[in-house]
Image (cartoon, rainbow, N blue to C red):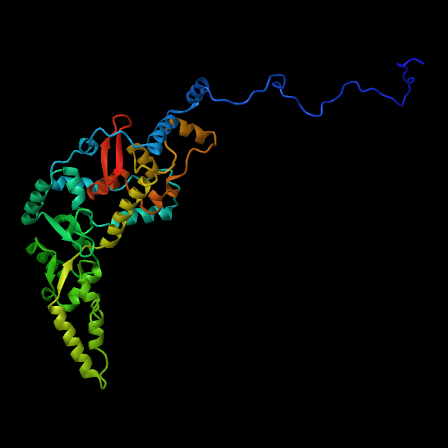
Length: 389
């Protein structure tokens, strides 16, 4: 019997015309497979596909991640890019450059936008002495000019107790007399007569931040304290029989007489005598929020700088960290948005806008430089570098 014998043709046996493949084969299945390896040509081809921003970030990563940046001397970046000649011009420049403009695509609703704008508008028009000295870069000349302006009644130097009066402190500030008088005139917490009386006191005493409490009555002092134009010393604030708001003294005097009425009256008279001997300090409304924002801006610069192991980073990279991974108006970012791709977060989601109300990076950098927290140096390759001190 032959071995190639097969069954007879039957209607029950059907040979398929074509065998369907269980898995679709790739057109590259016949090519030999090799392990991946890195070659200079492959690395060069990958660099060709990267954008200029990616290549710049890779360069920055190689500089600040593993080693220190090259240092060829102090940088003159701030002095070369800031044109100010005197103290008054510097004060106006610092005030005008504190915040960034509100972007069109901010990622904030109308309530948050109004909150940011109102917060900016309510801040006092003061600047730190450290910031002014850093921009002019002539400490002796600046100090002499400040004294001349104070004697001429154009600028007032405001000392804030408990905030530090050295270069890195927050308690030494400058304010233009015209700006201070404008704040007094538009205040709705004090009467017109008290406004004129307080303005005369400001013009008469331009060299000191201390004012004798007997210049104003108890009610007038209470109104000025509530409005934010006067503050009491911290030692008196801690005294159990003295209230910094000065509102408790009249209420005690109007209390009904009892068996202890005479002792209460003696306590009130004693507190009033201590009040008349008290020295009050000049202040300006919303000074606390300004100082907290100023301190937060300096601290944020140090936090971003400490992310590098070497403690130094190129200025451009530090600016990118400050602004966050936000979308830009560059052509590649606009093209990504048009295609529906992710091109960066909205500015309203970053710390710059959520906590710092859009504080400008350049302004915060100048504050940290003036306080002596950081220093700028020239790298010679990637522009100015920033180093913590």
